[in-house]
Length: 158
Image (tube, rainbow, N blue to C red; front, top):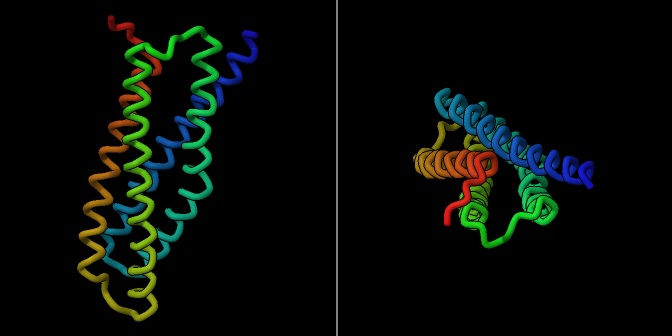
């Protein structure tokens, strides 16, 4: 039984690491591209960001609860533990922020590709989308950090 717990815990932690790592790397590259003000650079960066979201984030987002709930059962954690309830609420908020970000990225991909193909500068709408995307990214990364802290600490508040 202990081997199963370790395997499930490992999958759970890898999924969290992939979520956090992917999101923070995409944020860094999107910021670098944005600062270049070059439509072609931004277009290719957003294209790669969307691909990374599809390849890495979606499976990690799905794996997190698929491993987390069996892990809680396996280690004898009650589902009414406050830290677990808070983690789930934060996770739902993080996934909602990520989904909003992904939808913005899809719009950004179209806008930047059009600008690059027409050899035009980035439109003003891109800046607005990027600022909203950035705020959602910061909120999501703070949420993931809070979840990781709760996963490690597992405080038993009564």
